[in-house]
Image (cartoon, rainbow, N blue to C red; front, side, top):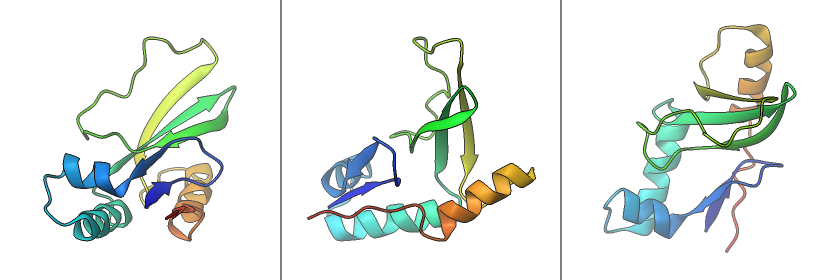
Length: 108
C-alpha cells in the first residue's frame, strides 16, 4: 500500500512506515501513521514555487529541517500540521487536507 497527497509526487509505502516506526505489524503501523497525521502529530511540509503549491510531503523524521540547500530563489518551504491554521488561505488548504483531498492514494 502507498500513501500520498493528491496531485503531488511524494508518497510513501506501508513497509517503509513499518520500518521507520519499528513496528512488527505493517497494517497497524500504517493505521497509527494515518491516525497521527489526522490528529496533528505529523508535520506536513509544503514546497511552494512562485507562491503555488508544488509538492507536499511528510518528513520521515519529524525533526528533519524544513530547508533544502538546492532550493531555487522562487521556492519556499512551509511546515504545518493538517488541521491547525492561522490565516484564511491556510484554513482552505487545511480543509482540503482533512476532508479527503489528502487523496491518501492507496494502491495495492
